[in-house]
Image 1 (cartoon, rainbow, N blue to C red):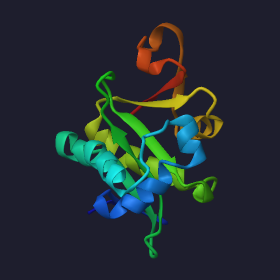
Image 2: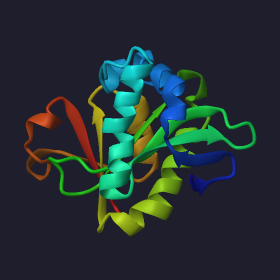
Image 3: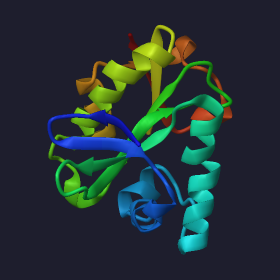
Length: 171
């Protein structure tokens, strides 16, 4: 199901048809370094990742991480979307892209579409983003999207946020 369409990208719900793409994406060196090992190494574990992650989120929250593909050829390039984490009161923007499609503006284009057309409806007046402290590419994208780094007393003091940047964007 198409969720959003941009000039160059088609954003759709993930499905079991995306098993191969998910296996590749979550095992990219940058994904492993900055997001972590999701223990996805075969078709069965990729289905489990989809079932317990994006597909469960669609059912429970009405939103989640979506497949981002090039319009026309339907080549998957990454995923983007909103997540509802148990330890945060507000929606959290997440994204990951295959390395060969980084630095082409696809992250900005797809995240902006999610923020403009989805976050405003689902998130009250703020949206969060989390990224590894040393993930300069994600930080640069989040700053370009209008997020601000939160530090000190404003940052939630949660063990899940240790070693992570916490950013907010006013909607």
